Length: 600
Picture 1 (cartoon, helix red, strand yellow):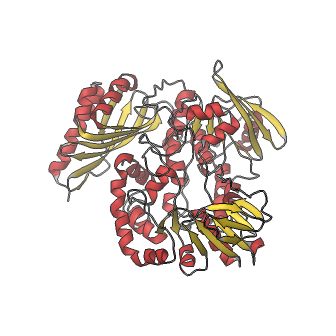
Picture 2: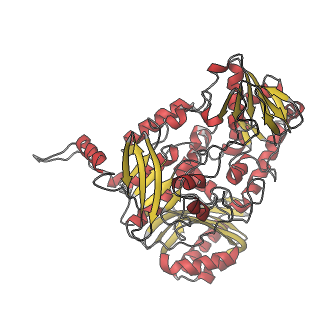
């Protein structure tokens, strides 16, 4: 039961914070935090995605931003409960600045602010047409020049990109581009999404046959239209593809299929881009003010260079090109890699009658799907969470409220529990020769994903095939070269192969900027993704947010949007509001821009 004394203390602390913010007293704001406190802001105060760590950073940010942002009010949300768990008291906030309204989350410890999250949810005067503001749709009365909804949509589609330029061009029409396009549509920002595939959703349909979501349905909703109650927990790829195609139509998105972006240049005098695209054989030149690369962090294949690739007589494919197992019954297949795609492809090939070998070059984090759902996700993203009043929007906020600097501390106990409950499973994998890890600090899957976007497999059955030898395993070995008919490992082992699949992941998203714009711009922006944790494949220095994602970059007018369905949904809100503010002429002084430390 909540101690009313703690609720009173939090109420008083929030009142003091409001007073300090409204007075624009940066030192008073900082003094309300623990010495080791955190303020994570998503576009509301910093016009950036930024976590301030410790009183000095908090004071510096407040001193730089409060006069420009002009906070007006901040208070505990009266419709939400304050909760208490031992030494930490937590509550939901609402606040307003001169230009926006937001939602926040606060944790109090020892009478001070331990963590504060502030997020921009709408811009004053530019609210989304929802609820009481929803459009009428039907036009009552009489008008001989009346146009139907269909006629208006066709006219808009014909005009935009030709007689009228989009304010935003989104390159990439997967879940990221579609979610952002939907948000921008509701904010009245003209945007075109371009994608090379024939239909929306083909990004999923055209992947390997066994691909399905490894995240559960409660984690994966898109903005505005959640999946129905009978949607499967783990949706197969073609079902997701159909949902995305439906979504683009229902949300009235200007989606250009069969369109490839060929080049882009920034005009600093005009403050706009010149982007040349090939739209189904027709060259079109666009002049958006803002360019968003939503090509996905799993978009640019990382294909290793291995001696002998030019002499190998069989087939070679990156995992993104693998069509499925049908053509490989009775064939020998070597899959290089041991993460999600590698396991999925190996299992499907075995089911299809192929002789398949997985080459594991470095340790992989494995977590059983059931354990992940029950131990890690269940409190926020599950049917029980929904029954407890935790919507996916609330869950997103709670998850976002934990600063990345200390997030691993929340996850280590969860994975300790998973190690205990699945001890026999892990012992069997190691007996089969599989190299396991739980991350550099034993914090498991989510931190690996946030830090490096790779290095794990959510087990939905393939591990049993590794354990019993159905999927052959070569672990702890590198690739020496390819011969005409085999993959040769660095210990001399020869693996005869008709097909080699490179399940070797993807490169940094700024590689798309190098291809489309220039290497100079890609280097100016630097690496996308990672926190700077100085762990494997996430070199320092520490940044405390995903590098270059969903926020301003060192190249004016260039943005990156990507991630899983959860991130595409949640962070599209903040990216769309940053773009809307610029379109509306709202002053957006950005605080905390980080120079690039890594170029790729």
